[in-house]
Amino acid sequence: MQIDFTTREITIPHIPSSLQEGEQLNMRGGTAETFIVQARGNGEVVELSLDTGAGHSVLTSKYFTAH
Image 1 (cartoon, rainbow, N blue to C red):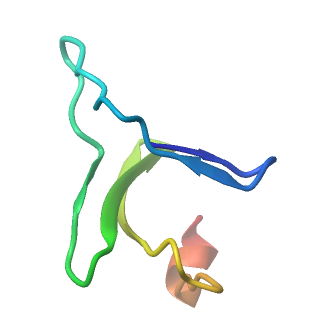
Image 2 (spheres, helix red, strand yellow):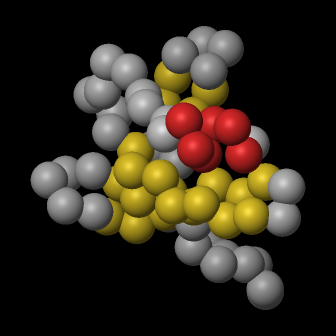
């Protein structure tokens, strides 16, 4: 799945991508028809709930301050 914020498009390929050696899945199905996505940055891995119908996102003040 690709998310292009410039064009505001989400592309889901007809044929799933295959993993290359050493790669791991970074998205899985969650509950209530949502996706769980692993985001990586600054040496951290955070799991996020990706709700494609959400009107906004929320980060806790503790997380926001730390990052």
